Length: 288
Image (tube, rainbow, N blue to C red):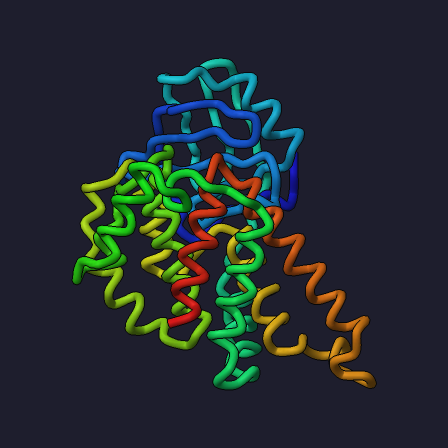
């Protein structure tokens, strides 16, 4: 039993049964009857709005029970357990994981940085992406990159990117999530989320719809929220104790740059290109 199991704010809390879509090294994907995925995660660092984290040992035990294509049953929040054809795993009480308070702090820090924050943040994202040297998909000059350049000239950009590009979660959806996050960070969340309301989710995959459903409510995967927090700290000069004494001395700046670089590296490792595509969207969204 893991007394500190977590569930994201969009995980249905009532009892349900979902087909197992796949068992991967760090995740078990379940197709919930509401048309979106619920994902069981091995690492707490990978939490997402439709994610459940039972702890690494519990995840490994469940992964050994789940059969792709067969159902997994969630008992409901009152006495939570997950049952698969091979047996039952009790998760213990589910604590709520919600990234919005951390994101709200990042928005406040970004606002504190003043009118230069959007351009400074966009430049930091551009520099981070340049260190990776990735030149495929949206980032390159191949067919996806050329079509991306065409789509960005259309009046519906960026919402016309839903379902566009390679990946289980299409690259266009990752870009959109990052773009939405950038707009929220810049303080224009209300107008950005209003535009998101018009996205046609039927154009994309189930995992793409799941990502966009969270973004439309201001909810993002943990790795993107950490990146937004690091970016806000980098442009604002940090907060609290980090700004005492030598408020923006080389040591403080160096720590903030290291944190941002670490968050960027974590994003690069997220999916085949999902993190990079989301960073590209964040760069454009935060820059305005």
